Amino acid sequence: PELIFCKGTPQGEEILFQEAPTFGLGEWYKVTVERFCDGHIHVWINDDLRVDLSDFDHLERGGILLRGWASGTYLDEVYFEPFQAAEIAIFQDTICQGDSLLVGGIFARESGVYYDTISAQNQFCVEVAQVDLTVLAPDTITLIADLCWGDSAWVGDRFAKTPGRYVFHEDDDGCGVVNIYEVVVRITTVAQDSFIVCPGTAVEISPGDFLAFLWEDGSTDNSLVVTTPGQYQVQVIDGFCDRMISISVYSDCNDDIAIPTAFTPNGDGVNDFFGMVINPGTYNLMIFDRWGSLVFQADVDGEGWDGKIGSDLATGGVYVYQIMWSETLLSGVVNLVR
Image (cartoon, rainbow, N blue to C red; front, top):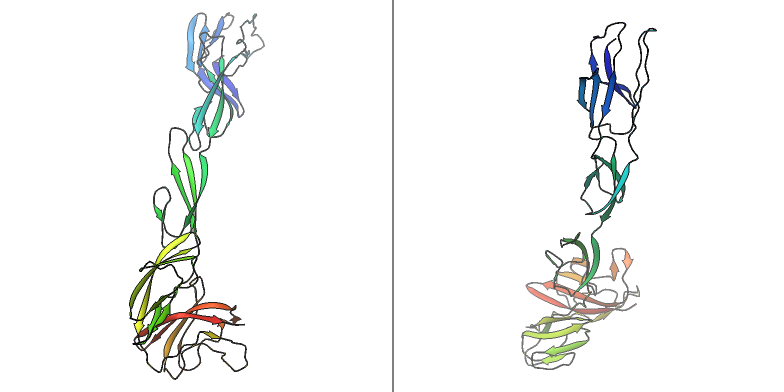
């Protein structure tokens, strides 16, 4: 008979060694099988080493089977010592999320218990390592950044000027920190920034409804009376935000200019539209709500804004207007009364 050495696998028997027939009839042979913990396998025939191979993929315990191919083949007593009970060495390891640890022939990336077979000091002892793996996620910190309009905040690796969510990963000695910045921009009141004064007269200027005022001359009143054109600076506080507003005062007293401070678009035929009066000719009219959003724009020659935003009625309250007439820019506020 030929000599065949194989192992059992879930897919069937796998041949590890095969040798052509070298045995004679009517003879007795001593077969010795040595199996070592590190994967080496020796088969001796009459004290002659015939098989020397390594099978590192199959270190679990198994059995040895000797078979005869003819009715005249006999087996004497067969004796071998099984492997001793496995010792389990317990280890603990910690990795960061996204890293991996090679254990038991696989790359472990999740927390759990894993096993690995390691070599022993003698052929009858297989040591099994148990690895208790912990995967640490980065710490997450959510920060709120309040901004005044026009300001910016440092969000880890950049300056943010617009509201939104900014994510920044910061490395340290552990597994790092993920900073999530929620940037909120406080709404600021729309300011009136232009007035008209006629020569020899005075005009009361004010940027609007704010909590506190500080004019260039040190006044803290909500308005300032001026008689000459120019630029006037006032520092205001709106909520927790403070800002500097520049107010332009123009000298223009054309009799054709007349802008109402309020209108009542109720359909009664009286004061139903807002715009310039006293036959000004064609001009461009823009209307903004108190948050600075454009709600109406048109080139007007006659009736102006009808108090609607699209097809919907605008709510009552104060709106900001800008008028470009000829080469003159006019702005102010108008009260829509419902």
